[in-house]
Image (cartoon, rainbow, N blue to C red):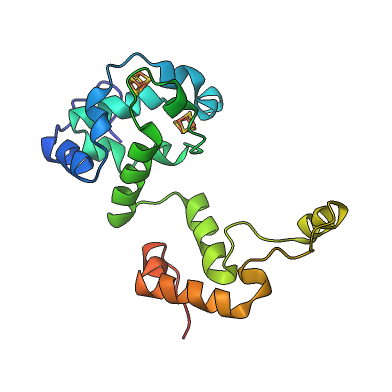
Length: 175
Ligand code: SF4
Ligand code: SF4
């Protein structure tokens, strides 16, 4: 990312590409910062939603796509609910992440989560703690997902292979 105060390379094609991918509400943002004020991630990190929207509007591709802060959003959608202009902020962030991954940028924590999806079919591991918790709630220990049917996991793997998901995160699916 550029140093604070350093001139940034404006790339209008970047903004156009974001809009082309369906994130056209970026043009509606008038920089009120309501999103930043309610962002739970921004409360504990340097992530500022309004600034991210502005950088996209201005075409600061090199600031946005490789940045760590792009991955600090938890996709809670609080900002979407509060934005007075109806900007689809979370969708915009997801679009930016897709673009970032296509260019080889992904936060390490997200890579690890995606790696779990490849290994188990679940992004969050189903450990003993969750099994016990499910039992106390009188649920089956194992949820009705890929965990209880190997065929479903095979189908998930097929999709990941077909979409080359493994390559995107630098993993390899055997077979
Ligand atoms: S709340 Fe909406 S209009 Fe205000 S800065 Fe955030 S995205 Fe822009
Ligand atoms: S969706 Fe992301 S940017 Fe919006 S409030 Fe939640 S954490 Fe912040």
